[in-house]
Image (tube, rainbow, N blue to C red):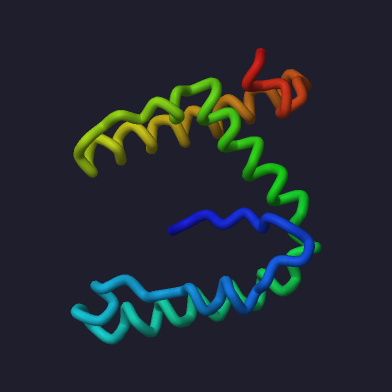
Length: 116
């Protein structure tokens, strides 16, 4: 999964859609993976066209990664194996979610969290 944050008002959607390429294992494995990839892309196209409805979600995504990078050290991810990266990132994502929930319960603004 690759997070995409819609950058600007007049973004060229055709340019984004033309840059999509299925992963190589979608071709070498079963046809199920290729169909699944195509379904995900078509769902994404439907959602991205209605982006105006998702501006608040974009803000929450940016806040989430801001907290993960600035408060929990995701910016300094210097692991060298896929397994070690997965372990560190999964801990950071879990702790970021818990931190956001904690600050929400005590009524601290999420945007202030990385600097708290």
